[in-house]
Length: 204
Image (cartoon, rainbow, N blue to C red; front, side, top):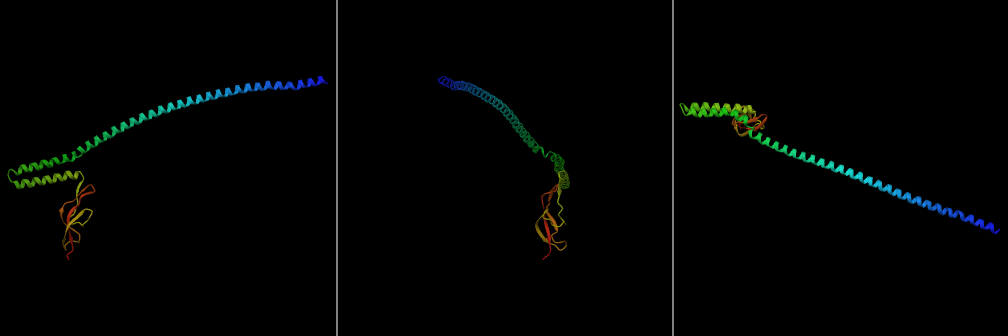
């Protein structure tokens, strides 16, 4: 009976020694797995960093290109504004060239009237010269859109007339324009000076 007991003890101890070796192998395998995962994680982190750096470099390049384009646009716009200002100044400087050319014959007529008035009948020559000057001046201004405002005999209209005085009159309707103190003018359809007029009113 004592032998049987010994064998039994050995059999019970045998599996315990085997489990120790298995646990050791599992520990070794686990350490390898951890190292592998750490290595893999490190590689992935490096790849992400490299991809981020590449993306950042591309964005920096794109930002620089956009900034350069913006600077060029700003320079072109400044040049455009300077050209526009030069053109505007030039236009304003010579804007009246057309009307001045049309007024030159009037200037000539006035000079001729003065010259003729010094020789012979001064009164007739002067009147004729002034009439020619007036007609030439009106022709030139009418070509630029100037029109006289009709006033005498018309009903008083505050849009075109300005009453400077009233006069009792029973021959015309009340508020009829009797005479002009100063002629009024339109430039195209805009009043640039209303007619200064005397307006009729009913006798008291």
